[in-house]
Amino acid sequence: MSTARILFASLIGSVIEWYDFYLYGSATALVFSTLYFPTHDPAVSIILAFATFGAGYAARPLGSILFGHFGDRLGRKAALMFTLMGMGGSSTLIGLLPTYQHIGLWAPALLVLLRLIQGVALGGEWGGAILLATENAPKGVRGLYGSIPQMGVPVGLVLGTFGLALINHFTTNAQFMAWGWRIPFLFSILLVVVGLWIRGGVDETPVFKAQKQSGDVARVPLIDALVHDWKNVLRAIGLKLGDGFLNVFTMSYVLTFATMYLGYSRGDALNALTLGCATMLIVMPIIGYFSDYIGRKRIYISGLVLLLVLSIPYFALMAQHVVWLYLMEVIVLGIVWGAIFATQGTFFSELFPAKVRYTGLSVGYQVAAAIVGFGPLEWTAMAKNFGPSPWVFGAFFIGGLIISLVLSLFSPETKEIAYSRTELGVEN
Image 1 (cartoon, rainbow, N blue to C red):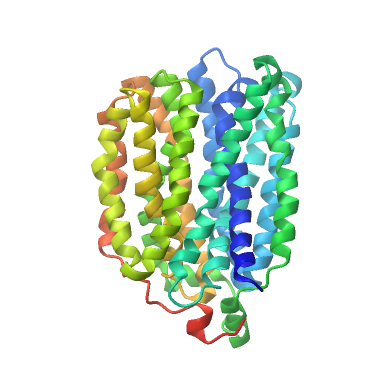
Image 2 (tube, rainbow, N blue to C red):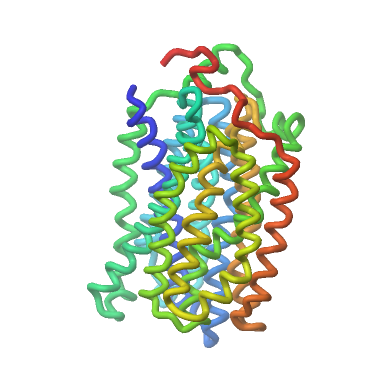
C-alpha cells in the first residue's frame, strides 16, 4: 500500500470532518441565530446559537471514549469509517432540517441533537487520523507524517466558510436564508462517499496489527489509560487548553468579533481568516518535518511563548485597520498557532503506549476541546460588557496560555519514543 494513499486517507477524512464542524460554526451567527433561535435581542439569539456550537465541543469527549475504545480494541480503520458516517450523516440532516417557523421548538432541539452527533464523530476522528499517519510513519519522519492530518483543519474550515460565502454571493439575502445556506451542508454526503472509498482501501496500521498479535490488548482502554497513564491524560488536557481557546477564537469566533464589534465587513473577515489558513498549510508540514530533528517540546514551548506575547497586540492591532486584521491572522493563526498544531498530534500520541494510544490521545485532547468550545459564550458576554477591549480579551487568553506553558516545561521530549513500523521491525 502506497504511502501517498495512507497520508491522503488520513487527510481527506480530517478535511471532511472539519469541513462539517466548522461549516456549522460559520452558519451559527449567519443563519441559526435567526432561523432556529429567534428572539427580540440579537445578542441573546447569538448566545443561544453559540450554545449549540459549544454543545458540539462538549460531546467530543464522549466520542473520544467511544471510538477510542473501538480503535484500541478493534482497530484504527474501523473506528475511522464510523466517524465519517456519523459526521457526514448529521451534517446532511442539518441541511434538511425545518426551521423554527415551521416546527417550533422541535427545530432547535433537533439542531442541538445533530450538533451533538457531530461532536461525537469528531471526538473519535482526530485521534484516529493522527494514528493512521504516525503509526505508518518510517523512522525519522513521524512528525512530518503527523502534521498531514492536522492540515485538514485549515482546509476544512476554508471549504466550509468558502462554501457559504460562494452561495451567499450568488443568491439574494432572501434566497440565502430560505434555501441557499443548506447547499454546503447537503454537499457533505458527496464528500463522505469519497472519504469512505479512500479509507476503505487502506490497511490497518502495522503498529496495531503487532499489538493485536501480541495479545496485549486492553479490555477497557479508558480504565487502563486512567489507571496507568492518568498523568499524561491530564498533561494532554492542560497542554491543549492555552492554544485551544486561541484556536476557537481565531478560526471561528473572529468572524463574529470582527463584524459585530470592530465594524469589518464579512468579506474582510473571511479574507483574513482565509489568509491565516493558507499560511498554516505552508507552515505545518515544514514545522512537522523540523520537529523530527529539534523535537516537539522545543517547538511547542516557543509557540506558546510567542502566543502569550502576541495576545494583547493581536486584539489591539486588528481593531486599527483591515491590513492589521489580515496581518495578525497570518502571524497568530497561520504561523505561530500553525507551528504548535503541526506538532500537537504527534506529541500527544507519543505520550501513550499502543494499547491505549487511541483512547489516551483522544480523551486528553477532546476534554480540553469541550472546555474551550464554550469560549464564544464567554466572549459574547465579555464583548457586551466591556466592548472589544484588547486588555480584557488578551488577559483571558494569557491565563490559558500560562497553564499550557508551565505544563510544557515539565513534559518529556518524545520524538525518540519508538512506535513506528520501522522501529518495531514490522513489515508493510
